[in-house]
Length: 335
Image: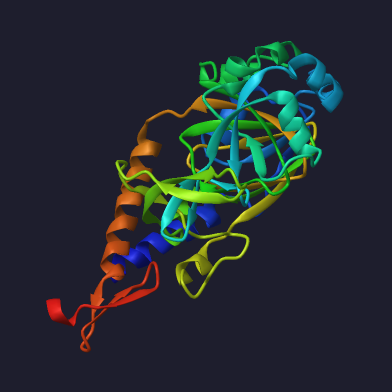
């Protein structure tokens, strides 16, 4: 098992040596579709593209006053949490936000500090097209050069608006993602798929936040749901005693400013923060389920096998040591 772990670490090192960048590069304009596929999609490397959507009216129009007038009365889905962490590990639970239906103007009231709690417009499944179609004239329905490069249209176009306290915990998606910041800025921590051996996973009871009448939040278990695999590590403050393997990870940090577009390749792990009131739109293009996906599935399986091998060790004193979640249980009666 140790030889497998060593080879997985070497796989990550080879990726960094052969093709991965030490920082996220910038492109100065919309790329040629073929060149973008060759240089970025195919090699599975992120980049930030400037001047790619300067022609969108949204860049100048989407002020709070304009949005109140245009879509203020529209009812949209909003994620509400006590701490800003929606879809994240909290103790031994994977806790999802309370999904609340609110009119858009009420969300803007929250951004302006007129309500308590942390609110984030983050519902996916093409919420821009489904819930806010009135705003679609202010941008394009797809990114033409990306659609040409991939030979398909996006699966979803999503609208994001939230407070500075709203944080997206580390995860990965099966999409080629173009993330366009309209106002404010987004702060990304990125890890390539080949760093998967250093990223810890656990299996957690799903639960949801619920705000009581007194304003306090409680965590309500979804007892009928299967456990959720998720990453318990916070890359802003990694617990290296609990997750020593993360020392070998090599995260990239970047800030995407208004008018800039991040290409976030499929299967890259990412953690996201934002400035207060940041507005963004992203385009999800489904990845190709080809040999790249096949190899990543193999990498994940090998990581799971080696983690399971390290997780339970029985020493001479009859202690079971869980190296992934730092629990020590007395199992002498079962040995």
